[in-house]
Image 1 (cartoon, rainbow, N blue to C red):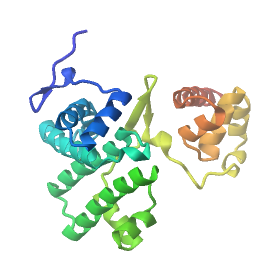
Image 2 (image 1 turned 60 degrees about the vertical axis):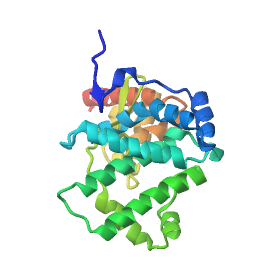
Image 3 (image 1 turned 45 degrees about the vertical axis):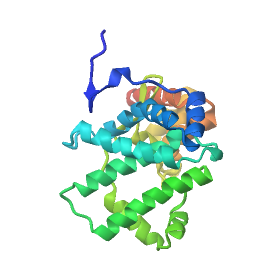
Image 4 (image 1 turned 180 degrees about the vertical axis):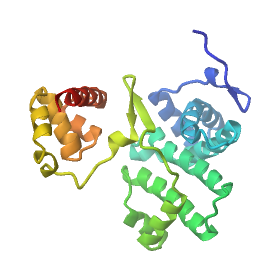
Length: 257
């Protein structure tokens, strides 16, 4: 089937180049030294990343061209501020920067008003979170963000909550081997415990009829409150396999229970 030509801001999205990790690292080093051509190639080579991010904001009645331009601003900021010495993938740093820029644009143009001081706190918190993540090589805590900004932790939480976008639990966050992984698949229930299912004889009987690996996946997912990522790491298979086996086990349980 022929590719459908889609243009955003006059750019044919089908013609956008892809950058390999090695080439991207080379360009980042050159751009850091002031090479304008390397910076331009790096920007163009990451426009697909911008497109993938702005797709999360579909259905907002915003023009794709506008979101794409704002996302490009976030990409450029990420390129200019990225520190190659920390060994973090550029996309890991760039995605939250692009998302933050788009969200700030949406907040400023939203009919639901949030006070300027709260918006400022949220913007600075997002920027500081991205900086700390690049510096530490991990997601910073609220306490670390608050300390860096010199404000109370509750002010950081309140500001980020005020600008948070509501999302559906059925929203896909990425695809692995063709299978979508949804937000609900990554939700962890800290209150889950083994007692909640041992009380049900019917469920216990159905669980016993499952293959050992499928039974273990359901135990970890629903009775120990683990995410699919955590289950995959513990069992030693891919997250996509966990997703498929979980769906098969649940279908079997519907027949048994």
